[in-house]
Length: 393
Image (cartoon, rainbow, N blue to C red):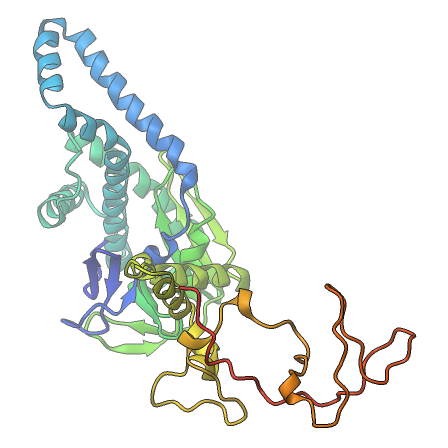
């Protein structure tokens, strides 16, 4: 499998440009699908690290004459030893990925030429991958590598014979502009009268999250060629995995590519867009600055409308509010409902209300002894002057 020409490796994963030499625009399908949490792998990482440590002890057991020298070397570079042990899972994954790339490349040659690669072709392809991409670096025996790959090709040949697929597109890049992603499918094949996306996998088992890759291809909008040319995306019935296991043989596994799976993929794209560092604001040195920063971070200043309208923006015509700095804290706000009239606000000649005991509301003028609502003041008084209230900062 050749690396797609429009793909670019970036610190945020593989991305795609839409034309040769263009800037990376969309994340790859595998990058987006990789945003799914992998907490279940933590135990496997630890297991792989412990296995490597035990292998080091086993080496000392099998080579007692070198034990003293090896112990001295390991203890003199503790950081280097820790890194080597911790990288066990990564090394395993890289070796498996390189082997999968190698088998993909051989199958791609078979799909394009119509004939199975010869032993010499397989050897040449391994040398090419090692030289061009640094792949297969952990392989120690070429014969062992060719034997393992040959077994996978046996399974692929059986698939070709049994399903008689027509390879409509091979290693084809697809793009979706609405969601914003691009990726490359191993093949778009025609089986019977149906078109579908097919990906070759050499993993130990078919994982359910392969459906996220399949549903992204099925919902692509265009085909994107290496020279930047776009072509209409054919209607695909679905997606499947052609599984070539280590034990030999093959299986064709259909994937679920419905609306629910695509909704998950879209959500993972949003997770990819999330920039954690942008969620941190500058430290606040005062309570007032902290409040303002929190409001800005939540869009609160805009939500407050005229209460915090920036200069140049007029407040709502039916409401004129004091600047944020002049608004009283919550603890100093008057109780809900109309404020009682002050002595200065009572019309001349009107009877003054009697003072009410602590905790009791004053009786309204002319009210009956029976309890009931005070309906004598239907209209609210004029707004009170709050300019003297100061925030508690």
